[in-house]
Length: 200
Image (cartoon, rainbow, N blue to C red; front, side, top):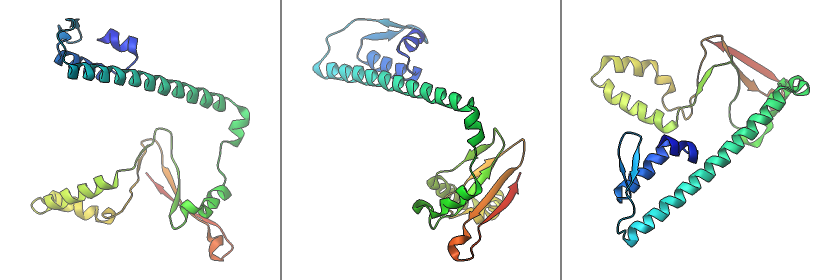
């Protein structure tokens, strides 16, 4: 099976799915953890034959899709390496203060809060699914009815309950800078401001 993974260039999980089907219809049998034996075609019904054709086509599509992904990844890596090694790119690899403020004029950012983050390499950013947050608080509230520790956790996290989106960032090496971007020129003050907070 390891040989099949290498030759077909697909995930082992995909091979397991296929061998399970082939074993189910009596074409192969498992001899060992990673070894299978071909038994040959028994009297296959029309329904089984259709199932085999379906999985063969699925395998072909999976191989084709995998090749496309690999090709795109290689192209992106090549483009990134070319940009990273370019002196001209290095001089322009930044976003200016006015560029950030201009984002407030974009239609998609109107009526929304805009922040800029400056974080060290290897920082971890997580954006939980809003549905997961809702489920988390529902379970926490149920647990808090009988558990003192759950009550304490609920009390400390009450300020984030009901928030549609949350962003968690952690860094073990250095501070993370968080800037709230406000373009106050739109309010008639004629000034642009950038406020900053620092979190460990």
